[in-house]
Image 1 (cartoon, rainbow, N blue to C red):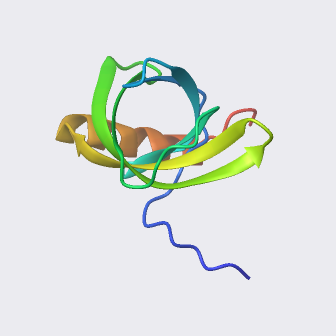
Image 2: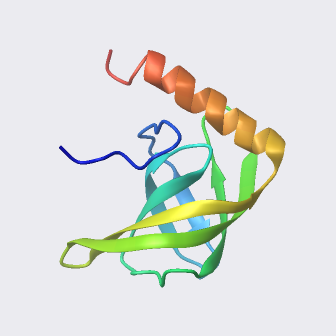
Length: 109
């Protein structure tokens, strides 16, 4: 059995992120600590990215993230683990609330 290293619960949500490299990419999952971003780019561990995204029923959220890990999942697709490096505390709390609500009532239920 694999040890779970996550500290916070995750929700699988489909939202698009605008990255500092002027690209758009979907989020695979999100927590109040960070996101898993799908991209055609493998990001370098330690890089800081500026991202902007909209969550359901919420204004635009802006954050700086730090690349924690990156792995190839298909021939030209990477999962990139991004930790929130700076995010407004109100936005972080909203994400936490959204994730917990999502876990209570997953899509399709």
